[in-house]
Length: 303
View 1: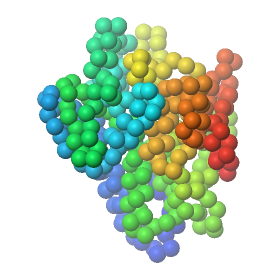
View 2 (view 1 turned 90 degrees about the horizontal axis):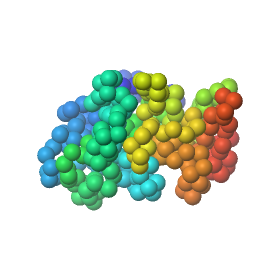
View 3 (view 1 turned 90 degrees about the vertical axis):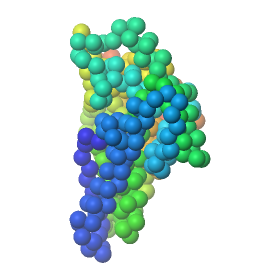
View 4 (view 1 turned 135 degrees about the horizontal axis):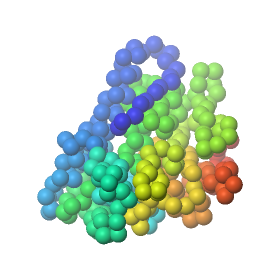
């Protein structure tokens, strides 16, 4: 996934650290083998190259993640779109990114790429784990797969009998049980300015999406990797970041993307409708950041 992972664990049975490392690495390797859009030999890579009309039987994890991505795509009216691979490449991101000389894309290129995208084109039957390639569809699960990787690593550690640990993959975390001494695991959320906020992760996960990472700049224009699938353009509102708490990191990951795309007003209304604990950081005209919590964040986030 092009990132790192770390684990803090209470290990009263003194399990060998190699066993813990192997459990997490194996779980993350499975995510890469099934859902990496960087690996042409992954199940996702093979689907993206497949001819129109071909039917594919998905491995279990891929099937579950795609089903959840489509759930949030429908719920948000397309603010999350697992079928937007051509747009990601067109704006200079991912393994198939266009040359810098082609950035930013012109209207004709944008319209052509946008026509190949759309979660509505994804013919997925989760019950029987089948997926049909309609032709030219390029899946990109980078808005949800890393969060699933955290959840998969958690499950692997729990199968070893561990019940108290904090697992982090690329800045997304899930706390299970308690720290030695009985206090909950604590992490610091950095919305983009100031000292940050300390929150407790007691059997829940946290994920953040923002515009400080993975940015491009060309022809006097700067944009982040977060694209609005509905318009085909990078998000252009004043949100600097969105942090989400959820029981599962896969959902926290997906919701952070959805809410970033929706923006502060629409996003906070969506979060409140779905009971999502979210913290929005909006960049003000004077350069400061204003924090706007959802109702569920106010109820859940204090450490």
